[in-house]
Amino acid sequence: MIRFTFLFILVYSVMQLTINGQQQNFDSPMDIQQLIEKLLLHNKRIAIEYNGKIIPRSHFSKTMLEEGDQLEIIVAVGGG
Amino acid sequence: MDFLTIAGKNYTSRLLLGTGKYQDFSETRAAIDAGGAQIITVAIRRTNIGQSQEEPNLLDVLPPSQYTLLPNTAGCYTAADAIRTLRLARELLDGHTLVKLEVLGDQKTLFPDVIATIEAAKILVKEGFQVMVYTSDDPVVAKQLEDIGCVAIMPLASLIGSGMGILNPWNLQIIIDNATVPVIVDAGVGTASDATIAMELGCDGVLMNTAVASAHNPILMASAMRKAVKAGREAWLAGRMPKKIYKATPSSPTKGMLTHSTPQANTN
Image (tube, each protein chain N blue to C red):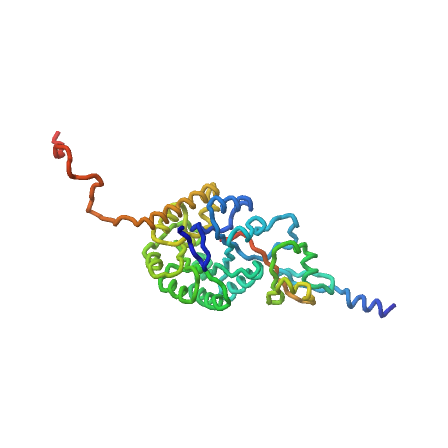
């Protein structure tokens, strides 16, 4: 039982991510696809820069997030 | 048909419009359509986290299937920032490569940093981007940007958002005369006559945002700009008569005049 609780805490711990310059806490483990669903952005046209690198959409569900990761989530807005 | 050809694609409209500063997306869409613009610029920004699912995004209102989107680097002050922004834009728009590069050098005037612009253009062209480039009205810089491989040169008419019109038509004329790619006046147009003058000079197109978005009636102004660009283009194609100071010539024949008295000075 003690061992199970320990594993539970290890697997479902909290991780801090920096998203668009703001620090937020999320459950761990989680991949990018799960994050954007949590942020209700899954139906939006977005692009993601993950720790300074652009992540293709096809890699969202293959990329596991880790404590301290930095993400930029961008969209097109009105401009000249 | 008189097409504007950019990077191998033909456009019937020579008015390119920005999508910023409108009251809401429906006004943006109405103005773009009233102007008949086929190429529209968009900016790349962080998404608003916590936005409601129902709230539309710009691309829902102006879908890439209907318009040629031109993601820009507005607000970038370094080559690195501009390159980063356009790489993200390419990912956002499924590999889209036609972009508007601008690297600014001064926060007060938004004047372009042409050295950083050249640096960014070299890298972007190498990476396969089709670069339409915002620059100053310096003919030497314009030629260098063309030599790098930019697909359109976009000199300013006057400062971004100033509405001051074309301040240096002579420089624009040199740029146009030297260019083998489209020259599109970008920035500074204030009203319809400015757009017409640009086109009469021989520009291939005009790009604007504030002149339309900040008009009292943006949709009517967009319509005016569409006609102004068309009128200027037609006048340029037609070829203007030469200017002749002190050489007044009547349009009606001087032969066969009825006898009439010579005008006399009034002595009363």
